[in-house]
Length: 345
Image (cartoon, rainbow, N blue to C red; front, side, top):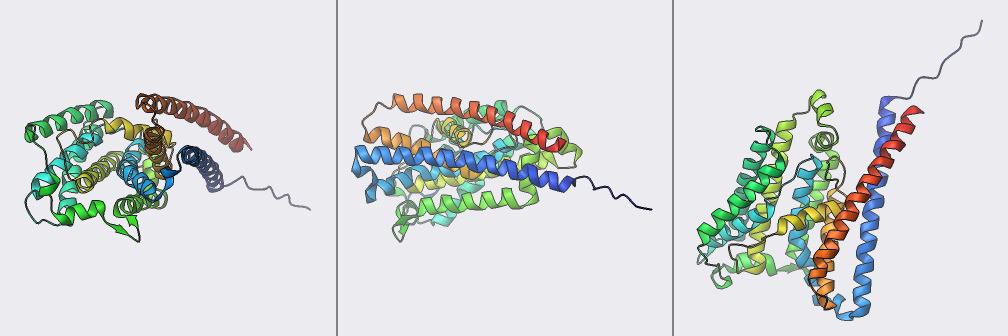
């Protein structure tokens, strides 16, 4: 008598690992393509103007991209949850002016200034997050409203005045102009925040749950994921990063007016989407968003060096945004098809 032993079906965990491996491969391919485009842009500009990559040119590239990279990291966390934060530029302007008013003519430290900026940013983020997560108001409406509210508060507070660098403590200005081994502080700070955010999203349960919320909110709810709290935390983090960026803006430029970072929210969203973070949520990495921010910033600097009208920067940014959205849609469809074929096997 012989016994027939049937092979067990593939374990769900194996299918899940297979799906994650495929998605990770897609992420890496997209990030490599963005990095390749960035490298081509830098080399092409350098060939046209060798001074583009001299010591000062490299330092300027790092400094110019630092704050945008920081904001892209915060925005990515929100977009991954299938939401958006259009108020980040206004939060930067408000916190920069608030921090400038606080330290003007005093000897307050850089740490105190940064903590004030982060605190104000968290407050703004919590307001938006509460309305989106618990009030269930569309994120586009909430954050657009917050954009105008914060701008109104900023202009009413400033009354046309500005913060002058001569009144800002040297300790604060040193944060924006200092360096370690020739590398400015700001790029190092942005890289640290970027690495910490990426590690949390990839390693911790809360980070993976943000992806689950963006991929399928209903399935996430049925799985017991605290959607409201996670979305609220995402907005609080985005606000904290924007507030931090506002303090760094003051340290970087010294002179601050009421409309600082005006219009940056669209640049931040463009950086995130160009970097491969799907506007529909659930897909993308902060590394890709950072590469998108670097690409847009470098493109702006390259056009200046090549003496090209700034209008073309906006036009090229628009083309890149449309191309990114189209590519994202195509990749999503093909990835979904590939995953379905694997699950049938």
